[in-house]
Amino acid sequence: MTDAILVWGTAPNEETAAALCRTLVEEHLAACGSVVPGLRSLYRWEGAVQEDREAGFLFKTRAHLFEPLRARILSLHPYQVPEVLRVDVADGHGPYLQWLAASVRAP
Image (tube, rainbow, N blue to C red; front, side):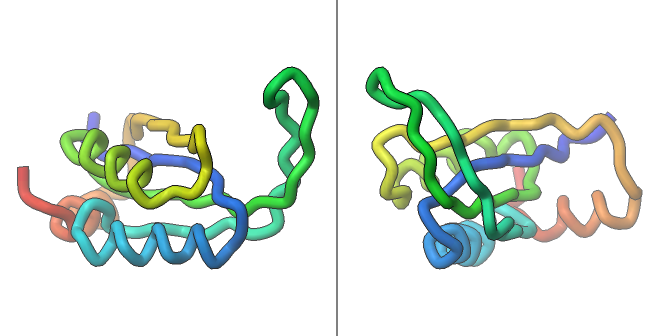
């Protein structure tokens, strides 16, 4: 078991995703933020199927930081209803998990 988590979401473009990543890493809410360019999202919104180009973002952090990280994403994100999903990490490479833990705020 580990307290590492992944937090996934989408943004309207790479620049917005990168700005979110930079801010949350600089604020020690995430050890790493990755930008995933080139998403094509199809979704239902206000009764109709929509299609947009987006960029994804993936944060690596610890469970106790999820609530402040989510709040910060919501405060910065341009979408009315941003996607913010937490994925618990069951296990991982020990040295990476140690680096992750050392790179974010202490509990």
